[in-house]
Structures are given as C-alpha cells and as structure tokens.
Amino acid sequence: MRIGIVCPYSFDVPGGVQFHVRDLAEHLLGLGHHVRVLAPADDESTLPPFADPGGNVVAVPYNGSVARLSFGPVTAGRVRRWLAEGAFDVLHVHEPLSPSTSLLALWAATPATTGPLVATFHTANLRSRAMQAAFPLLRPSLEKISARIAVSEDARRTVVEHVGGDAVVVPNGVVTRAFAQAPRRAEWTGTAERPVVAFVGRLDEPRKGLPLLCQAVPLVRAVVPGARFLVAGRGDVAAARELLGPADRDAVEFLGSVDDRAKESLLASADVYLAPHTGGESFGIVLVEAMAAGVAVAAADLGAFRRVLGDGAHGELFTVGDPDAAARAVLGLLADPARRAALAAAGQAAAARYDWSVVAGEVLTVYETVLGHGRGHGRGHARGAR
Amino acid sequence: MTAVAWVLTVVLVLVALAGWLSATAQRVDRLHRRVETSRAALDAELTRRASAALEFALESSDHLDPASALLLADAATTSLDAPRTPAALREVNDADDAHRWRVESDLTRALAVALPVPDGTGPDGTGHDGTGHDGAGLARVLDASHRVRLARRFHNDAVVQTRRLRGKRIVRWGHLAGRARLPETADFLDGEGDGTGS
Image (cartoon, rainbow over all chains, first blue to last red; front, top):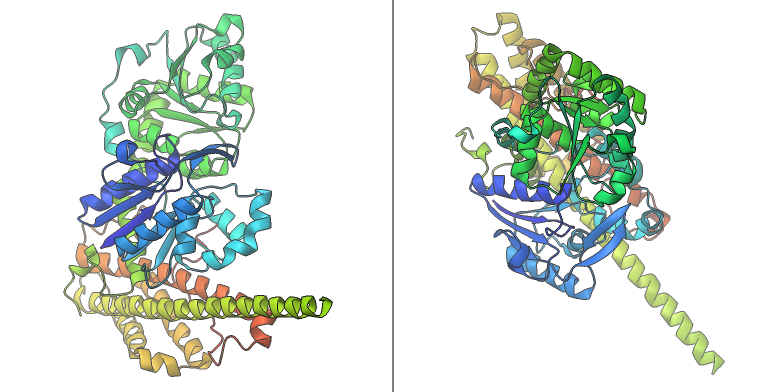
C-alpha cells in the first residue's frame, strides 16, 4: 500500500503527535508498505529518512503551548506537489484542524490526487474561539475525510461534540519492549531508605502537574524523609526550584530534557511513577510507558488516566489537584512493596494492548476498510477465500 | 456612473452566488460519492463476515453445539442472500435496507450467542487473540466483525454529513442534490452494544 502521512508539527521539537507519526511510519514500513511523511521543516537535515520537508517552520502560540507549524502559500504549494508526486492509496492526516500542513493537505486533497482520507484526532481540547469562528470554512475540507480515528475516548468525545459525527478509537502506541527491557541505572534505583519517585513532563506547563508534585514533596518526606524525586522534562529548572521549600530542594533532582534511552531507564529504575496532571490530557501515553517499564503508577483521577489504568486495576488513582491525596497515594505504594509489584505486573500486562504491533495493525485495518475489499496489499489479502 | 456601479455590483453578487452554488454542488457530489463508496465497503465487510460465520458454523463442530451451528449457519445464509452487487444496490429502497439491517442484526445476535466469549476484550473488541482453540476460523469471524463495526461507523458518518448538507436551504432550493436518494444510516446491531459506558 502507498501511504502518505501528514504531521502538522515540526519534528525538531519532541511531542506526542510527532512521536506517534514517527512510530506509526516506522511500523508500517516494517510491514512492507511504502510510507512517506510530510512534516513542517525547512530542509531534510532534521527529518527522519522517510519524511519530506513541508515548508518553513514558524513558532506560533497555539492551543496553550508554542507549536512549530508550517503554513502560507509556499507550504500550500509544497503540500500540493507532495500529494501529486506521492500518488498515495491512502492519505492519513494527523490533527487535521491544526493550522499547518495537515489542514493544507486536507484542503488540497482531491479524489484525483489521493485515495481515501483518514484523519486522526489527538487532542481533547479543541475549544479555541478562532476554531469556532472558522469552523464553517473548515467544514468542506472535513467532509473529505472517509474515516476518523480518535486516540482516546476523550479525543473521540471532542470530535463528537466539536466537529460532529463520530470517530473510531485507536489508541496511541508504545514500543513496550523498549521499556520492558530498559536497563536500570544505579543512580536512579531506589533503596528502602531512599525510594525513587519519577515524573516525566514539561516543567513550564502547569497542567502537567509539576506544581502539585512540589506541594506533595514535603508531605511525602514527612513520612519517608529519604524519598527522592526525579523530574525529567524540558523547562526552566531555576523557576521550577522556586516552587520548592528550601528544605526540599535536595530531595528533587531535575534531569532536564532526557533522550528516549534515559527515559526508559528512568521509568524502569523508579519505585513509583507519579502523574500529578491537572487536566487537558487526552490519552496519557506516559502512563502506558511507565506501565510497560514495570513501575507502579500513582496518577490523578482524570478520565483518560482512569481508562488507561483500568479504573485503578493497573495503578493507584488519586483526586485531581489534591496534593494530600497524591502524597497519600505515593506513601501507600512506598509502604507496600507487594502491592507495588502486583500493580507493576498488572500494568505491564495491560500495556501490551498498546504495543505498536497491535496498534499499527488496527490503523492498517482502518485503511483497508476505507479502501474497500480486495485493494491494497494488506495482511487481509493472504486469505485465499473469494 | 452610479448606473455602472450598480450593474457592476449586481454582476459581482451574481458571480459570487454562482461560485457559492457550484462549490456547494461540488460538496454535495463529493459526499454522495463518499456515501456510495462507504456503503460498498460496508457491504463488502458484511459479506466477509457472513461467509466467515458460515464457514465457522460448518467447520468447527467441535466448538459449537449443533443447535448454535444451525442457527448461525441460517443467519449467515440469510445475510448472504441479500442483494449486494453495485447494480442491485442502486435499485434498493429504504424498505429493502430496513429488511437488510434486520438480517444483519440477527447475524450479530447469532454470533454473540454462538461464539466462545473472547477474553481480554479491548474497548473495540480487538483484544482477542484467537489462539488456542481452533484459531483461524474464530479469528476470521472476530476480525470480520471488527471490520463491520468500522465500516458501519464510517458509512454512517458519511450519511450524517450528507444529510446535514442536503438539509440546507441552498441545496434544497438550488436542487443541488439532483435526484439522488437521501441516504439513511445503517442501523443494525454490530456487536458494539453498550460498550461505550464501561
């Protein structure tokens, strides 16, 4: 199958959508399909080998954070050429409403240039006023989409409420093996006196919950004085330290932005993963990563997290935005190694459902469904039945 | 001068109106085509499900009691008897469709009763692994059922958007939909059931 994938955000900044597109493309390539990815980039230098540059990148504040997008006539022209040259059987557009390559691809797509359109909605918060104002203009483009995918129940609800119509849920994927087999690092591995609580997330986005974590630190240390908190994520470390009382500054180690290997090892080494998010999460991929790594998870009771954690069967849930509840959940896990091990095992088993081998297969099934029977070269065609 | 300005304004308004009409007509046309394609895909997946179910009913006698096998085979055959060539589909009316969806609901119910309960049900029913007991046949039925659910959702999505656009005054007054049948959603049980709540 010839598959074209459009990513709206630049690959030079890490982000959930970019990782999703990269991993999906790699898995589809691994299954023997022809895959090209179009992403905002000035040239090939920053792109993986299967991706093409979509035009100059501009940093724009969008949807609560600064996104690196491509738009304008030059990009529109490149998108149109890319579609014409790609001759794709299926065009898969990610985050189709973001004002970047995705929306331009949707706009430029015609039945003559591309096969059926598939779109994946990642976000659970679409309620920008610009979007509501511009929606009538976007509707004709949205009508071209043959199959809509949402990465979570929450993302699907957003589609139903804000876009109209429905979407099928195909979750985000995780390379579970990388986390399950990640080597532990001695400096990140906890001991009975000095257990390790890990957190991965942007420091400067309050909804990721760092302020809440900082409030929970003294509460945890009141009971377990040796507890260490390892925080991995980009942002202003000096500003983040200000959130801590002077007594707690040594208990929290900021690792800065870490690469994939380090993140895998961190999750595999820690005793508890704390997800103190306060909202805006559509899926909670970091929870799946923590589960795959085999660390016990304590997470805020957000809808997306509750679903990933099987209503608490694969991890501890606590009241959203409540540092006392977060501290209690962490302390409960630290005090009970048996429960920690049980949750870690349950989490690891549950994470298998999100492995890319499963998820990429589901995406491929969607492609095959919109292509109709007997087209393409998917796995469904090995069956001889006619 | 003012007369020229007036004429120009009128011409501009007419051109804009014509552009709007033609763009809308194109949208209607595109949606009609989408409905046709998605309906064909849905029919293809339903055919696959029915043949897989029939095969399973006839070949896995050690996993099905004879009563279930007979019921399943009967439901699958009834589904396979429905008209499904593109030419035949163009002729169907709403009553035919209503009958068709009843038949497919019956097959879904028969499958729900006859199939061994899949363990590890994912939110979309793909958590099955089909290994162990006579993998292939069962896995084929489960996979086909999953694809029916996808195809039905995609089809209904296209139908809902088409009906929405066709309800607009500009489409009705401009007769932009021509004589194409107003599409109806495919309302049958596909096994998703009340799975949204859990």
